[in-house]
Each structure stands twice: as C-alpha cells, then as structure tokens.
Image 1 (cartoon, helix red, strand yellow):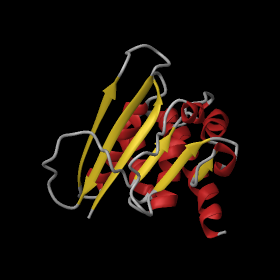
Image 2 (spheres, helix red, strand yellow):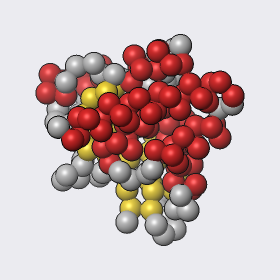
Image 3 (cartoon, helix red, strand yellow):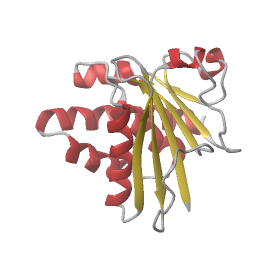
Image 4 (cartoon, helix red, strand yellow):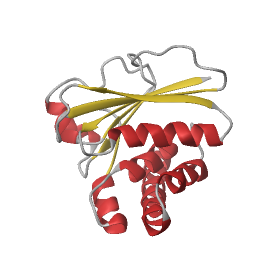
Length: 180
C-alpha cells in the first residue's frame, strides 16, 4: 500500500520539517518513505509545498505528488489563492489548520486549531506537530506513537515533549470529530 501526502504552507512554517517527520515516522514503523519540498520564491511567507510518500515496498518514483491521498494545509489563507486540493483521490482526506469548520472554508474535510494548540503547548503558533497528530487521527496511516518518536528524534528535551503534547491533543480532538 502506498499513501501520498501533499503539505501546503508558507515559508517559515516548517512545511519541509512536517514532511520529513512523517517520513521518519514511517521509517520507524519499518516502512519505506520519501519526503521532499518544492519552492517557488524562497522568502519567508511565500507558499511552499512538501510531499511525503509512505509505502510498504521500495519507492522508485521521484516526482511531485499530483494525486494525493491526503492534503494537509498549514495556513487556511492559502485556500484563497489556489485549489490546493486539486487531484485529491476519491475518498482522500483534507486536514486544515483552522478554528473554522471546513464547510465555512468551502471544502470537505477536517479542521483542527493546530496553531492554537501549538501556542498552548509550545509557546509559538507552529502547527506541525499538531497537524501530524491530526494526520494520524484522520488517516490511520501511521501510529501516533511513531509520530511522537519522530518528533523526539527531530527536537530535543522540553521542546520535543511540548510538541508531543500538541500532537496528542490534536489527535484526541480529531478522534472525537471522526467518531461523531
């Protein structure tokens, strides 16, 4: 089984780090993965896209993901600029960092207040860890514990633990939504 994820955000939001942590979590589960970004303008705040492929067998393709199974949007404001969900496979999932419901944003998917969760736990509105916890809740592609391990491998000490708390809160938040 292969799962393809496209992550949209702005430079400075850690879009590349999010894809790398997803791929590391997959490796920790004994799976194959690759993560890579594409850049337009390399300035802070410019739109950035990263990709992550997770598979049970070696991955040979090395090109952008045009038909993702999941689209993660770190900044809901980007929805006004382009159709970020283009190519989403039937039955695919959309996960957006927003306090507003997905329907208000004009899409069908899930929202989680990832920046607010991060602000509470990390002290800064950096949505990565919370969105990765949310990814686990809505897709079941990776175990939350694998994402926790990837966060701990990426960050150290209290920063890692605060990000683990953010991932766990977003996971619990979205598990309630998914059950409803």
